[in-house]
Length: 458
Image (tube, rainbow, N blue to C red; front, top):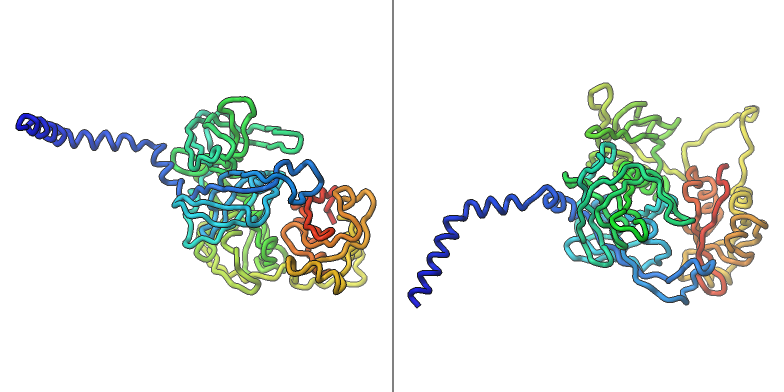
């Protein structure tokens, strides 16, 4: 027994004498990759979905098919719960079947806010109990071939999986299938698997430099990510307050990203717009809006989220090397300041009615519901519009809408009256919504598909 105690005492003495070098070894284990993950992980979320298998088997999803579980990853882009992911992660997922798990383990229901099928990105939102950690924003403008990068994602449902590799190539054009192709992707050999979609590609500074989007089927360690600079321009459009909340600023900008130089530069303030009235000038650099530091257009748009027409914000711009304060009062996108057009103006063009534009662009004649039809729509929807006629070989005809259907939604908006239709067909970004998701009632069922607009230009 005494001998055993002496052995234990000797071991303690040895360990004590080695403590300084042992702590040094521990510090060496905190590699740049470890520190990078510690920085970015709080802003990465895991996404779980449930949707119908093989939705392409029929023109409409009727709810009678086999349900499958899906998975993906997302990145927090605003502390109020706005998250970016891939569109294919949320495609055909119905409300109530989209769930987000944060890094602390808490889980929330989510809803899709806006999406861009062509570029395979979507914004979803949760209502968190506290402000979320924002993604550390990097730039893809100075990525180097063979630079070390890290992928984080919900790979095959293994949440928060971390893989490490290098940038294998820059500016790859990739065709995944006959329906989806990508331009200017980052190729990496950091392992990316199903479930990584929508997650971050991170540099050793812990900054997001890409959004993981695809893999090469049948290959090993060939994955692709959307460059973050490209993604942020799309995010700005997806967060556009003109699209989401009908508030109007009238400011045209461009992202300038050249390595450490990252700025949002004003290119124009629309005539008679809130931006022009606020005093914005060409080449102003927007530094801050309210409490939000602005690096690019995505920051600018999110600084205006959840505000209303008439709300005023303090803005700081850099002009001629000095900072200038401005005050921006948001307008109503649906009711912009009136423009006077003289009757004898030879350049004035005929203003088409919403009904005429709907017939030309969508191929639909729509009318109000009678009292019987209103009872069919309620309480599921606020209202709808009756399909009176469908133009042959129009988008509506080709994509399955029939006379007698009740149209309840187009894109992200309800369709309840002529004003709703007018807002959509006259929207300046209508072409960017293409294909245009629609929801109809037919025989008591809610059906949906997409209108593929050949030309939404007015």
